[in-house]
Image (cartoon, rainbow, N blue to C red; front, side, top):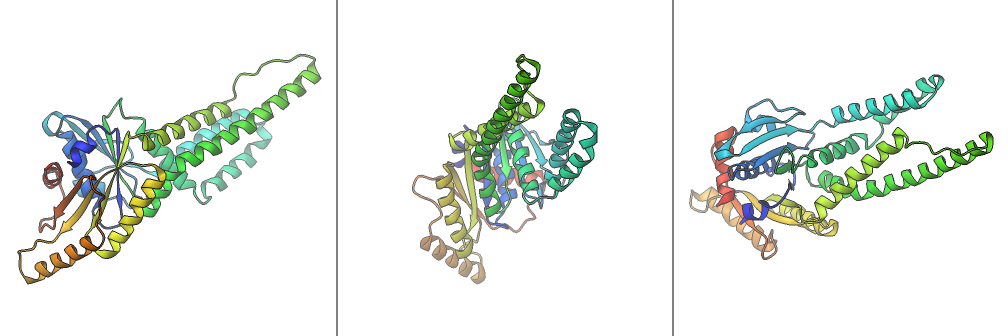
Length: 319
């Protein structure tokens, strides 16, 4: 059962092709886990946030309470990479102002302004924010459910922690060489050697390395699980197959699959024909390997927004 597969996870990533219902499914999963007495945070990483619209409440970059089902708690947050980037650059700017002579402040700030516009800056900021939210598990929340951006963007984000850990390691190594050189020059000039305390820059790099290393460990050691959402159509199923293959390459556990918006087989000629097409697509390209929990959600006529409808989705995922 899908929920049984997710109960032991500290983090759950819900992903798939755009438009297949990831936000609805991630909210349903989060509600079902909260209904089992857990403290759950559902976090949207998609730049085109729809979490607040789904719940019919205002959701921003800080967690807000969405529901309290059966003794549990469910909070929601829409991660804002721009706010994260601005906070990070403000911290770097303050550090550089302390480290550099005043005559260099203007040039340093111009450099940071350019860095804020560099390709990949928002992606890096989003990863930093995801890593910081992941750290909330075990303290503020039992489980964090990430409602992710469409497939390609999500896969790139999940591959970055390992790469950025190595990149930060190299920065630290270069910093070691620089500090050893400065210490040697100081001993030549002053005739004595004095150990300098770790610089603020070094401390910042250490924190970043530890954060990305912890996130990489989380997504590859079974603490995290990925729920792939698709619909029973040939093109989404083809992209779904590529997603599943890439998750295996990255070492991320596929915890379950949801086939969303299945047409009923006995509700008129149109929907019956639609159901036959879906069955043929699923037979041609099965969405799950044997043993992988799989849930099919029906096509529903109602507007699936608001706490009551999300709870209904959660109950379907539980059964």
